Amino acid sequence: MVDPAPLPEEADGPRTAIVTGADSGIGRAVAVALAGGGVDVGITWHTDKTGAEETAAEAREQGVAAPVRQLDLTDLPTAASAVDELADELGGVDVLVNCSGTGSSELAMDMDFDTWRGVVDVDLHGVFVCSQRAARHMIDAGRGGRIITITSVHGHVPRVGAAPYCAAKAGAGALTQVLALELAEHGITVNSVAPGEISTPMTGQTDVDPRDQERPGIPLGRPGHAREVAAAVAFLATPAAGYITGSSLVVDGGLIRMGAQAGTVFPDNRWRRP
Image (tube, rainbow, N blue to C red; front, side, top):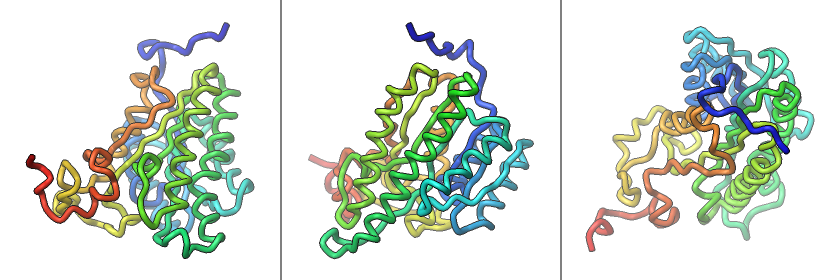
C-alpha cells in the first residue's frame, strides 16, 4: 500500500525551484513568479548569461536566493549536472520547471538530420535528463515535489515547418504522463503547460505588448504574455494543485480550438459569425 501524498491543507508550499532556460521569455517570467511566492529559485541559461543574471536580480529583489548556472542541453547527459549543482546549492529542489526550448522553421523534406537532432535533444531529451535528476533529489528528500514542463499547443496539433519541434513537444507531453504514473507514489506530481503564441524573444516579439498585436484567428484576439503562462506554472507548483498530475494545461487564448495552423493566419474576424 502506497502512503498517500499529503492533502493541500496539510502540505507546505515549495521552498526551492529550478527553472531551466530562465534567461528570458517564459522562463524568466516563471522564475520571477515563483520568487514572488517566496521560493528560492535556481536559474539556468544557455547562451545569454547577462539575461540570466537580470532574471536572478529580479528574483533577489523579492528576498529569495537565485543562483545561476549554464545548461547546454546539446551536451547530454553531462550538462544536466547543473541541476544537481543547483539542488545542492539551494538545499534541495521542490519544483523543476523545464523551460529550455528551441525550434526550427523548415519543411521536413528540406531538413538535415543535425537540425532535427538539435531540436529534439533540447526539447525532449533535455526534459528527460533534467526531470530524472530532479526527481532523484525529490525522492531522496521524501517531501514530494512538482515537475512542470513547458510543452506547446504544437505538441497537440501540428504546424507546417516545425516537424522536430512538434515531435519533441508531443514526446515531452507523453513523457509527462508516464512520469506522473511512476512518481506518484513519491508524492511527486508531473504536469505540462502548453502555450500557444506568446510574445517572447523565441517568437520574434521582444519587448512587445501582446495587447497591441492583432490576431484574428485566435479567439481572444491577441498573443499571450509570458506572465500568463507563468501564472499557470505557479498554480501547478502550489499545494492547491496537489491532486493534479499527468495533465496538460493549455494556455493559448483558444487557439487550439481553431486548429493551430489556420488560427494564426486568419486574415479577419469573419469566422466569428455563422
